Amino acid sequence: MVDFTGQGWLQVGELLLAFVLSALIGLERQLRRHSAGLRTQAIVGTSAALFLLISKYGFFDVVGENVTLDPSRVAAQVVTGIGFLGAGLILTRHGAVRGLTTAASVWETAAIGMAAGAGLWVLAIAVTMLHFVITFGFQLFGRHLPGSVDRQVQIKVVYVDGRGLLRNVLSTVTGNGWSVQRAEQRGGPIDDTVSVTLEIEGAHDPQQVVTELTAIDGVRDVQLYRENELE
Image (cartoon, rainbow, N blue to C red; front, side, top):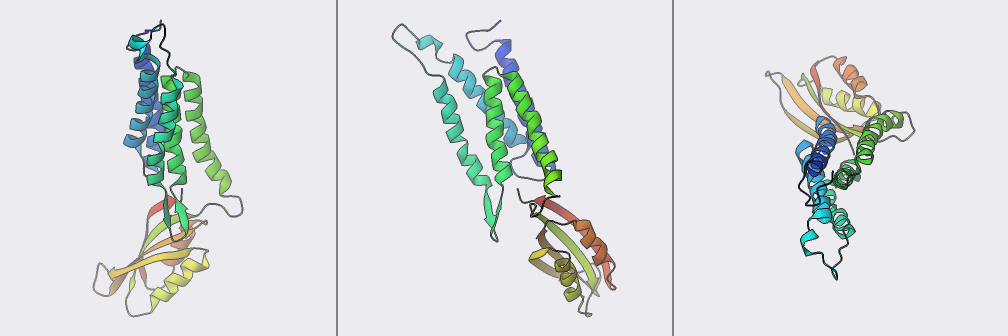
């Protein structure tokens, strides 16, 4: 039974549903090391649901014979207001735009929270399921298409100093279709070695680069310690 004061178990359930669904999206973002992770998405989704509930039930005490309300106005303002979060998540670096998918996911989370708050449980759950189809299924499909989305990878290479191996390392990376965005060189773990951290971008398999770098004579260690899609 609907509680027209807006503070019944039905409304609590709608808030909890928004929390769970938005947290799932946030968990996916966080596990893939993107910004706007678990906490941000959960707050956005739950808050959007609360805004909808306020819009539906929060003004019944002022409704009278000559007073009418438009609950959709609050929903419209939520859509507008969430834009500042999305704008803050989109970055441009070296000519590549990053964060579009994450920014879109915040917008999506707000919509899911609004749907849950409006009592559209089935639609909220369906869109959450479609989110995972898009982020996982489309990613696998997209990697087999020409011009697929580049990924950003950081590789740490430790090699023997004084042999001119950095040239071989860089040529191996670029020869596999990756572009070097940044290189940071410092002393290695022992006196005769040098450590270089490369930030590279490309659409190919980074493990192939690691395998070829490891095979270079004089390379002591290769670590692939961060991989992010430019989303």
